[in-house]
Length: 470
Image (spheres, rainbow, N blue to C red):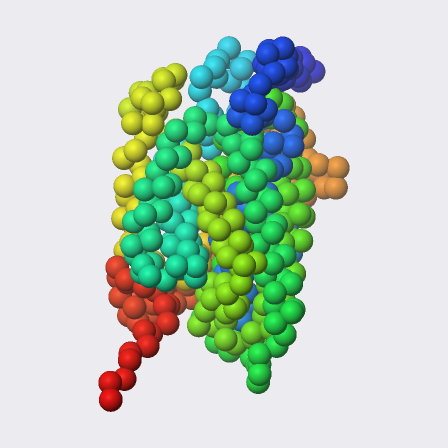
């Protein structure tokens, strides 16, 4: 056991040394490119996690509060935030376990990005690889779809001369340029800017709602129906389930073993954005939010709001890249081109990945309800159930627990405690997230299809004012 620990430390030291050597090379020929383009520190990982966790969903959380009521909205944000941080911790432990075992077998990961489905394959076999690949890729596809829908929904509040579907065409073309970003190392400046932009938007919503005050005759009647309650709950589950890219972010770190609590620290910061904005908007507008899934739609147009819309658009472009990059890696591996060093050749190979995302965004333009459907049907498994089950199965034998690369954390101490927490997560998410949440969000989604139709030209747009002729 001691020898195994020493091997693990030495292998991860090599990773750290490689990173330090790269830093030294960069420092010796310091330039703007090295500062902005190549990240791998703990701070880079924190910015990536926080930036990726909250983007357009920030605009739908007031809508969720109107469906659930204030108290449930606040409590479930804390609950799913902590649950999500725990499963991100489990994923990081399994990544370290997988990498340690492979490096004992002298497997090199030079020019290869480890992904979640490969971790499952290495630890639990090909069946788990297939399950992980199916759920993860489907979630990332629809996560990217949601960003495109959000772009079209937001820009409409600045320029309504074009309908939302046309804006989706335009932003689909813009987001396709993410094929040129090689890996998560290269998101250093984008993560920093993205989080700054979302921070501005969150505090704009909070302050603008308070300054606006409560609308006349405001009512706060949520929750009115179980369907709406569980639809809102699964949107919050989706909010804190952004770690489908956790393994890729870890792999981009110079010292991946330092990732363990980064997601929790990122979540604590995200609470300072999601809670004040959702509370203030619901306080000000109440039940009006039930028919306005985008918070921007209820605030008067000002320069401050336009700035928030533009900054959110840029951040959604960044988040689209975050969601799509793992899909690009999978596609490269399928074609046997993952180790290609030419940026332009890789970009050309990656382009077909964007086309179905573009198409789905045009079919299902339901900003808000689609978040809940994705949360219940995909995030519940990808982010909560599969990591918890995989951790329990990986360490089911006494020898696996004894030789584990990562022991239980200080606040739990025992493997029994780990199994209790993981079992609770599996049962809760299966029953409440997937079961009740799936029923509610799919029912709500079908209602949107019945009301607006597939390929809706302008979802939730105000009816055009027709001129009266005398």
